[in-house]
Length: 331
Image (cartoon, rainbow, N blue to C red; front, side, top):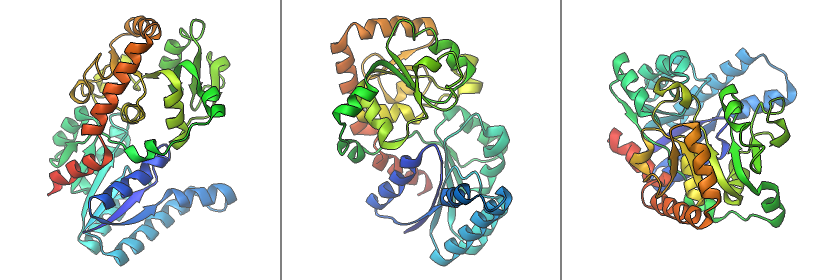
């Protein structure tokens, strides 16, 4: 069976590449179409307006897909893919189209709700938003949590220089939002806090800002060096309509690294990891502060929880297993 895989999710560069690897491990033939390469070329040379680049992406995608004659077209989010292109893909290839979307619920109104009806199947990591797709009439919308690749973790080699660079009590790796700033500025005077991510350089946390966002293997190396990885799902203080119920990719990445993580509560996390045994959760910032104090003072408990989280990941949450789960819905 042949899969035409469309990637280009700019904030998940390594994850983009791990998916076709997992597809091949499951016996599929894969052609990779990375639309981000078109943006990279234009960013360097600044030749074409954005609209022309998008048109070029869609034109090339149709040409390559028609030539490849896939059984499936697998799109990872797919921001620049036009609805007219999705319609033409079905006409030209007769393939089954499906999307694995990673930015619900925040882009539901602006993007995903508009494109979902044009896919045969629409997968999202957020179970809360599945109900919204069903109300739209997209009955083949399903909840599919993230998974991750164990082999890429095993091959990581963290140098002494990198250990020194990433070592800290608490690390937060993520983009700036005012609500996150309110929380993190409370930590920096009491703990050895380091922040990586977009937009922090002019914030009240700029003195602990370490630089631009960490991606790929550099981020995974950081996970292995920090005492506590702090996870703050976007919008968690505003309620489920803003944060959804799903666990972000950070939960799976850190579990794959055997890192100790404290995350805000998301309804789907206890379905994947046992709270206080395989991951630590908080429902309020006061609770987070108490748990940070406690676990910094108890390194053996941190180690035990991280190890059990890693064992759970190996049994249930590898990307290879997640691809099997995805096709169980389609088949």
